[in-house]
Image (cartoon, rainbow, N blue to C red; front, side, top):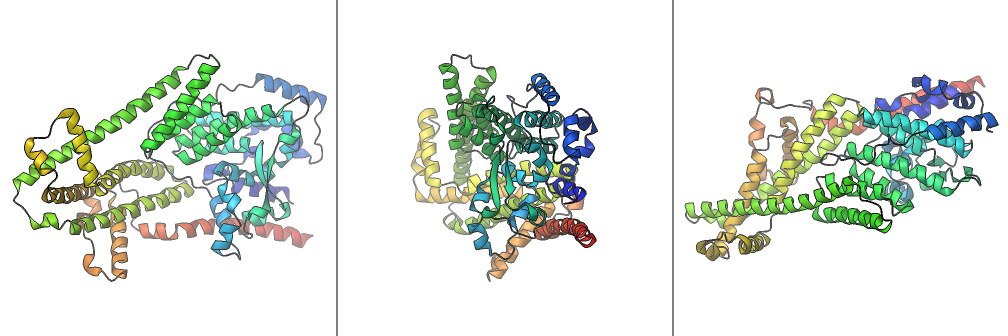
Length: 541
């Protein structure tokens, strides 16, 4: 295989943005100059032994290497999660001559692999020669690549740091194609990638008698902690959990991993009460380990424990306070107006809220495509605005969802339980609370509450118009055109709406409908780019 074609292949299909396509060897001359051993690998495919002088150099560098710069033991910010997208997702989804059902049956193992593990499949050409040297040589390269990732992490260039961390991880544990001759065909989506096409590999066979498997596991744990921190900074909490679960499968007593996994549950705004209990369980397990080995508990652990307890308490108190205010407002409104038939006919209002919720679900789903679109376009400015919009949108979405699905009978039980503690219900309230007419009014009032959240949401105008139009088209296709939904958002001129940042182009439907096609075109271009040089080489021969 031509070395130039080989190098381009491994460099252009690693990850999802232009930043992931930087040429490691060409963009970092200082790294090459400081590592003559690495130069020897580039110059020769056959010289795979380590000389005595090289061993001295490696041991000295390993002795001087520092791990204090690893992004471990610090706090994060609270965010809603964002799905992790990479270009190689499309390579794995290519079905070839298989049906979708057949593809699912033949990729059970691949789909179970975490993102950081699947990514190693695309680093074979870049790292194959390093993996053929002995373990000591591999370690020095591992530390150099990880150190580069640490520097990028400190500069808050998390996606670039992630690239380096995964490359370092791929020196220890990776996936390979069984048939390496078809490497480019897999990457160009000319052949589907199935379970039977790949093998799991590790650097364990390189370890000699003077080293132990613990040495490999120590390096794996260090890089997985770095990966988990980076994934959390990028709000990819599921990916971070995969890294941490992998650590705890190696060492169930690793307190740093227990802390980080607990943080993963805590800082994810979509976490439930069950998730907070898991976070508490992890930190309590860490305390038990410290106690067992008679180690003083670090401050960050006790601070994190207090954060969990306080957050759980605050959430419960906030919910009770909000429900109490909602009940009192509902009761006062009930007394102000005479009995209305509409209170018993709350089904109509409920159907409107169902439509509104469908609009919000489409918006939530579309934001995922937007993140994917701007990630692939490497538009960091728009991506930052999109992430900020998602935070604001999700607050409204969760609030709407809460009241829309609020069960009135459970709500009444909560109010009565709270009254035992604070005794805020009057005699009249206690009489009305179990009357069917008032309960119907509560249903009506909670629907109005959800409607006010929707109408006052200050959503992205282009996006909500797109979602409303999509919902109305679905209603029309079902033959229920009379139930089409109209909203104030349809009459707002986004150009005249002051203070509202519009991050989406007017042709939003084109982005959503053809987002996948754009990515496919990129791959077609890459395929041609690789295929033509290979054809030229073949013809020359």
